[in-house]
Structures are given as C-alpha cells and as structure tokens.
Amino acid sequence: MAKNCPGCGAPMEYDPGFDALVCGSCGNIIDPKSLPDANDFYLNYDEDETTALEDTLEEEELTGETYDCHIYTCSQCGGEVIVSGTEVSTKCVYCGSTAVVFNRIAKERRPDYILPFKVSKEEAVANVKKQLKAGFFVPRYFKVTEPSVVRGIYVPYFLYEGWFKDTQRFMVGHETRIYDGECEFIDLPVEACKNLADQTTMQLEPFHLNEKVEFDSSYLMGFYSNIQDLDLKHARGNATIKARAFFDEEVLRQIQSGTVRKIKRVTSVPKSEFARSSYALLPVWFVSIEKKGTPYTFLINGQTGKVVGTVPWNRLLAALMIGVSFLALASFATFFFIKSGILPAAMGYTERVSRVSRKTGGYEEVYGGLAVISAALGLMGYGFARFKKVLDNLNLSRSVVTFIFSKKRQGDAK
Amino acid sequence: MIFVLLCYAASIIASVGLSFLFVGVILEKSNSFGSNKESVSCMKKFKLMDASQTPKL
Image 1 (tube, chains in turn blue, yellow):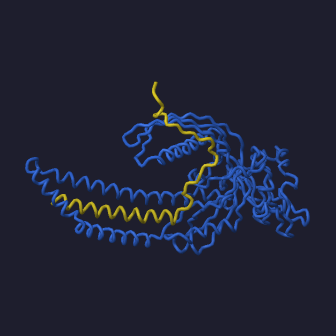
Image 2 (cartoon, rainbow over the protein chains, first blue to last red):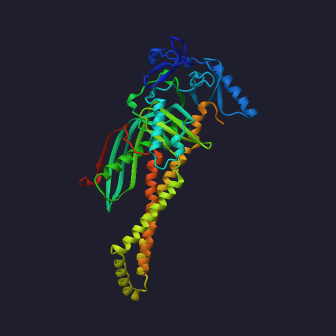
Image 3 (cartoon, one colour):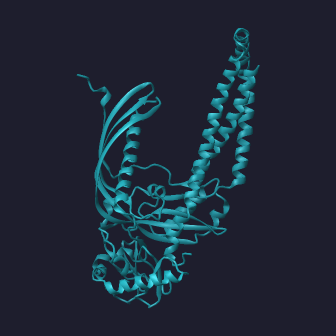
C-alpha cells in the first residue's frame, strides 16, 4: 500500500536528505509521522486471502517452472508485483509505485525500530566511485563503469542486551598472566536474515543505534526491506559469538598497549547472558557493477556511508609490481650481502664451523643454513597469506548469495 | 661455504616473500574496502583486571 501525496495523489518516497516523505510529482514534503501509519492494515489482514495465496503457490510448485516468490497486485496501478518469499516491500515494476506489500509483513512481527537512511542514493554511488578511483590496482573498467543496480534495502537485525564475563590466561613473553574482564552490551546488533554473509555485515558496522526511531512504514517508502528469517536460537548464538569477538579484541588491545612482547591467549572461561531486546530494520545500500556477467556488489552503510566490498585487481599490473619488487629486493640483498660484511662474517662462521665439524661430522654448517632458510620461508609464507586474504575478500564480494539478496528485489531473480 | 650459499638463497627466498607482502598490503588497501576496525559503540562498562597481580593470601 503506497502513501500518496495529499496534494496531488502521486506516490511519495522517503528522502534521507529531508528526513521526510517527498512527492516526486509536485515536490510536496511531509513529515512521515503526520500521515496515518498504514501498519494497521496488516494487523487486520485477510487470513483467507493469504491462505489462498499459499495454496496457489503450492500448486505452482507441483507443476514446476516456478521460483520461490509471491505475486501481489500493485495498489497503485493494478499491475502484478513479483517479490521473493521474505519481502516486506517492493517497488512496482510497472508504474514504479512504492507499494508496500502488507500481505507478507502481516505474518511477521512488526519491527520495533527503524534506523532511517541518512545517505542518499547519489551519495552512496559517489562513495563507491571515490573508493574505486583511489584504488591503485583497480582495473580501469570499474573506474569508468556506472553501477547496474543500486538498491536501498532495510536489513533486519535483532538488538540484544546482556553481559559478557571471561577469565583469560595469557602467555606474555615467557610470563603467565591472568585477566578478569567483564562488559555490558546495549543494542548489540545481530543480523536476522540468512541471505547475507556474516563477515560482510560485520564490516558494515558500526550503526549508531541511538539515532533509531520507532518503526513507521513511511520510512519504507522508496526502499526495499526484508523480514527476519533466522530463528531465535541461532540469533542468540550469534549474539554470544559476536560479543565474545568484540570482548576478546578489546582485551587483546588493552594488553598489547602496555607491552611489546608476544602475547598468546592460552585459556578462556567465558560466561554470558543475552536477551533480545528489540527487532529493528537497519539501512544498507547495495551497489552492483557487472563485468562480463559477473556482479560485484558493494554494500554501503545507509547511515554512515561506509563502503564494504572488494574488486578484482589488475593482474598484469600486480604481476609487474611483484616482479619489479623482487628484482629490486634481490639486487639489494645481493649488494648488501657482499658489501655489508655479512659475506665475510658468514665465511668466518663457515671456517669456525669447519674446524669444529672435522670433529663432529660437518652438519653444523648445514643446520645453521637451514635455520636461515626456514626463517626466509616463513617470511615468504606470510607474504602469500596476505595475498590469500585479499582473495578471500574478493570471493565474499562476488558471493552469489549477496547478489541474489539485491537482485531478487528487482523481481528478475533467475 | 654451504652456509654462505644457504644464506644467500634465504635472502632470495625472503625477497620473494617481501615482494608478495608488499604488493599484498597495497592490494588490500587498494581493492578491499571496509576492513578497517572501528570502535564498538554497543559495548559499555568494559572492565579488565590483572588477576595475576592480586596478592596471594
């Protein structure tokens, strides 16, 4: 059900810049709270109609050639709007009306809060372009291509309250240390849908939840949204895991600030208690750039504008850089090896070892060399590991799951 | 002499590692966005006590 302009009757959209509903036709600006909340509609939804819809879908599944979605009629133009199974709202694909589909939202709990979009579509795209242009290894294609999909989506989150305590034993250098720590969590956000990769959504944070407002369907106008499809048992587990990660990170940060010695966590005895306090919708922009049929999706925090995502690198440039770096370092190493006195020192060591080795069999020299080789191999492994990390991030950004999440909202999921 | 040769080989191997490390760090900053750590605003009243320094009775 769309919210129409009281002046001209055209559908209105929520504009983050004005923090108000704006009429695209006559330019009328209205406070979202001044319009009657259409949520009452779905509190009194027609159960028979919903059951009939489900029956129809079951029949369609039996005959094949269907995908998991619901078909609704646009309240504005009468056209049929296709949405995925967990949609709350969508735009009409025919008239572009921001019709909110209450049939589906009626089955789920109404969100307690919503964090309205603060970053506009233009700002979100500009942020992504700025990041891409600044990237040294970003292929030119990504710097000049316009995004193929830009969608503002409200992602559902459970907000938890609780506490976390832990007694952790560390090895600080050769010394054993025990630390007792505790903290409280207020509005710990835990993603309530399965469609998105956890790592991606964690990178989107922080959301400043002190700016959340009571849920009003007016904020959904012009945006898409999804309802919770993660069960509470898993969500609570995720809350504990997330709290522990934050806690561990903070403990390590505080211990590391006071020492330069190597720190290793040996044991941990965590205790925690969390209770779901509320259910909220948080704003995320999905910006996709397609290259040869492969989508590269960037997520932008709709409140802070933080960009999350990865693009492939310019392989030729990267290979060239590695080659040049290697030649430079190898030349430097050779020069340094000969000129710095390491060579004479090594020769001296060899002579000393040779004298000893006459008595012991001659293995000391080899052992010393192997130790140095091992250290070098460790360094090489670390270099490769950094490369792998970048590759992992790239795969996450390419993730089909992430793409489907935004693609489905266009009504053309395959 | 073996030790000298092994040391030189090690420096070449280390050069390979450092090249990947160098390009990897630039690549990460250049092509991966949003991996920087930010403060956790939902965590309140954090307390940490060094229990190993508590006097033993």
